[in-house]
Image 1 (spheres, rainbow, N blue to C red):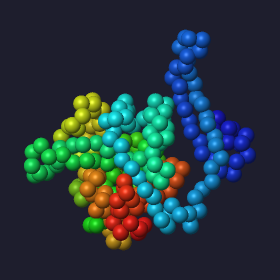
Image 2: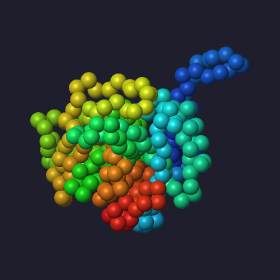
Image 3: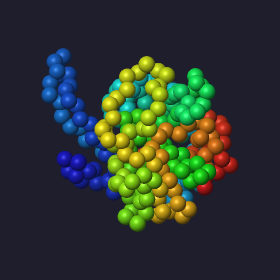
Image 4: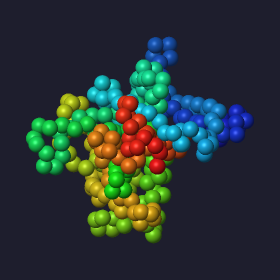
Length: 257
């Protein structure tokens, strides 16, 4: 169905969205739904696009204010809420990042909280610390993105580059990586069960890159983002885009690395 729809457009490249409706209202009654294929013209970004040379500015939105029923699903309900939030953002803001509050990890004073940054409204988020550790949320906290999974695969799944910091085992798909254990969110929203009953190693080291990079599957904190070496977002229809400003404050020196 997808190839037929694409052929009918005569587009050289296109963005394709598949929508499955389990049921739909017809004449006031619930009828069996079906698959909808949306095809729109899409032009790939050029290498000299200002997005890459200048970077983008992002804003923040507490996830509690959105009440997502299932973060791992791109539902019609979520797309509608996302469109409303996008309509309210500043014209200079490229993306809106979702945040939540948690009690601090480790040996911090009891009762202290920190702000974690999960993902963008339509993008996955990567934070590169000064020690070359990559932080990104996984598991049921976020919608696992195709581009994000490809990036992780290319860096950490090369047979010559993967060096788990714990006993050797293959790196699971980003969609199956549960976040590291931590106190429950301060909000009362119900948590979703993990998609993987056996927690994988929490961190990996890639010798494929120079200098070597390490990966930890957990949301970066807002403090870590502000102090990061690099912050990037990506999605299926765009490559890695550098984030150089968060709510008016520069990330690092304010320039893409």
